[in-house]
Image (cartoon, rainbow, N blue to C red; front, side):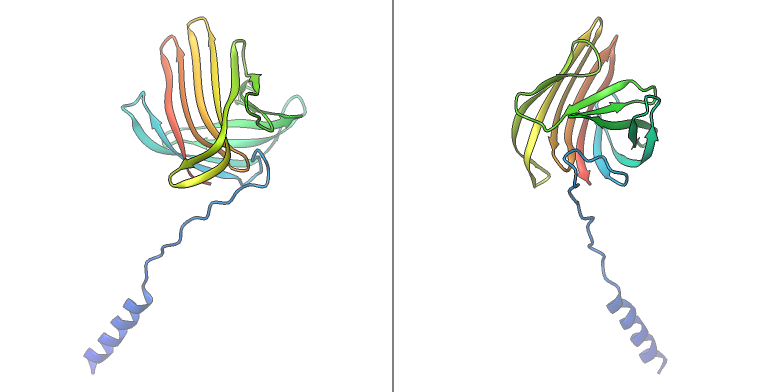
Length: 195
C-alpha cells in the first residue's frame, strides 16, 4: 500500500512538472523614437579594449527630470556589469537630444530619419548622416524600414566613429563605436537582444 501511495504521489509530481518555454515578447513602441518611462532594451555588449569581453547592457527609461533650462527630459539608465551611467533625453522640434549628467549633449537624432539627411552633433566637426534605408535582419528577425547612421567627429588628437542601425518604434538595433582621445577610450559593439 505504501508503494502504491508513493508511486501515485511521484506520478502526480512528474505529470505536473513541465519546462517553462515562455519567451519574453518584444513589443514595438508607439513613438517613432521610443522615449517613454518603462521602455526597456537589452543589448549584447562587446568591449574590444578588454580582450573582446562580452556582457550585457540593460537600458531602462526610469523617470522624468526637469533640466535647469526648464526642459522636461526622460531619465535613461545604462546598466553595465560593473557600472552604470545616466542620460537625459528630450525632444525639441524634430531633434532628440541625449545629455550626460554634466548636461553636455552626447548624441542627437533628427526625426523622422530620411535617407541622406545630415546634421551636426555635439561639437565642431562632428556630424551624423543617414546612409541607408532598408530592412535589416538581426538574429533571424526582420526589422523593416531601418536606417543606417554614420557619425564622424574629430578635433586635435581626437576622433569618433559610430555606425548604427536604428528602427523606428524600436530604437537602436546595432552600434559599432570607436573613440580615440590620446589613446583609445572606446571600441565597442552593441547588439539588440530584447526590447
